[in-house]
Length: 82
Image 1 (cartoon, rainbow, N blue to C red):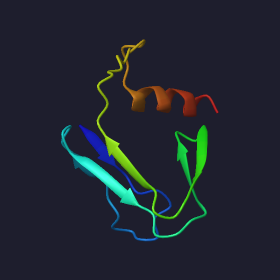
Image 2: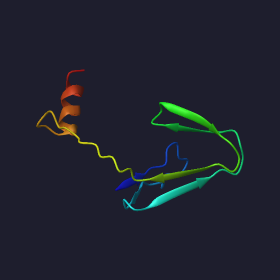
Image 3: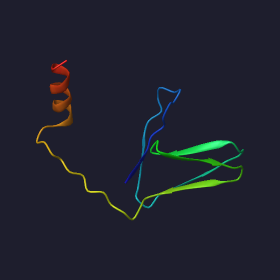
Image 4: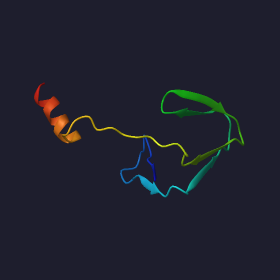
């Protein structure tokens, strides 16, 4: 599954949208001078008429949980030390 989440939204009711793995999103630019950023690391400038296709990758990532406590408990423990 994929999650589409608006960033820097000016609307309080802007919520994430959950998409199925087979869904695809195409964004077409109406003017030039736009910049796309990938995970805040790599960026490139786009030209008028360029389009971006977002789809689920064939690659998978294995997530490892190193501690047996939840994220919220871990956060609470760190805040208690401050």
